[in-house]
Length: 458
Image (cartoon, rainbow, N blue to C red; front, top):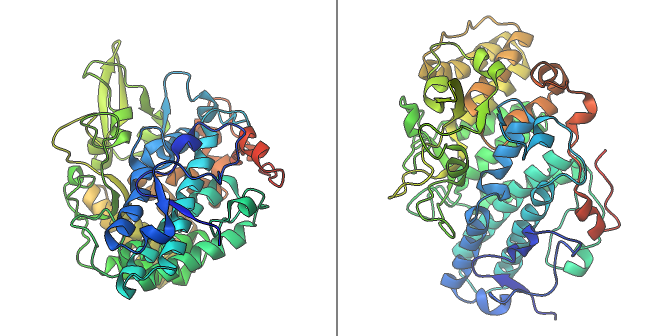
């Protein structure tokens, strides 16, 4: 049997500086141990699982450390970057040669490789059944999470299900439906394996409700309205999660709204709370706020909306006032008070509202409006009427998702694309217009060179 290798903390992140190498390298990095040894010891096996989260949040400008949120927000109409670095995203002129697109592919696959190693290693180990279930559940959750973003960015992607790198380096792309079926099964398995209790003192490792929260999103995206409604309801019913009145508390590491967060890992820059805050918050109170919320987006908020007042910040630069996104308040601060929040309760209300609005009966639309009003009430804006028509209810959901989830994890971009609203909405905001072809994110040319079976995005 060929030896398999797994990382203890960080898989070979040289994948990030991608060239023409295979995106799955059969040679193990130096900081690994063979799976046969690692998974005979519970502490080492758990450390290997924790290494997945370190890989996701250990460095700046990585897929899961705020970079996906930044790039997709700029590509949509959340905010833009005032310098030229991300003009291709702001202008929706992405090409296979555009910088950073390779990271959005190679980094999720690196994490998927880690998850596959965990799943195989645990299955062949002598660990206790409860530990096997927990670690397998976490790995399947993380694998599903990565595939969710891969398929929503690139539509058709290879399904890497194991650690056979020689086979996987030449896999063809699976259809979007095949990928979603795989994601759904991974999350159903994760729900079955994970316990209700968090396996850590903080909410930085997924539990059953985290898996259900992501599964509810998947059901929404695949238009399984009844399942999206019922699964989101399971999360909402858990009294550990609350919608706090104080918006400034939502992204703290102690947030009662958080369902899953990424633990702060300062591997290169002391005092970082979140890499998103480190990138976006201006260096001084008089400095240039390079990340600026689109004026059309600011104008869409009600004047009293606390989300505009508390989650964006005004700064004057060269006698001009700009607002920058400020859900995360700190570039650096000690001790750490903010964690990168991945899943939170407000999204579950929005998922349930959209599912109910799509079911479309008067009773369900009334319930959808009630869900939206939970968030509108917290934001101090007028409550919606329960007698909205179905089209008006769906538009209200779209707007509420924009206000509530602005700048988070690419939600706005994925929402506009999946509902086929991108052209109508973004052609108003984008100075150079927006056409249907702009909805497709190309696979980077260096990625295409690694596998002759890969085809460019449609």
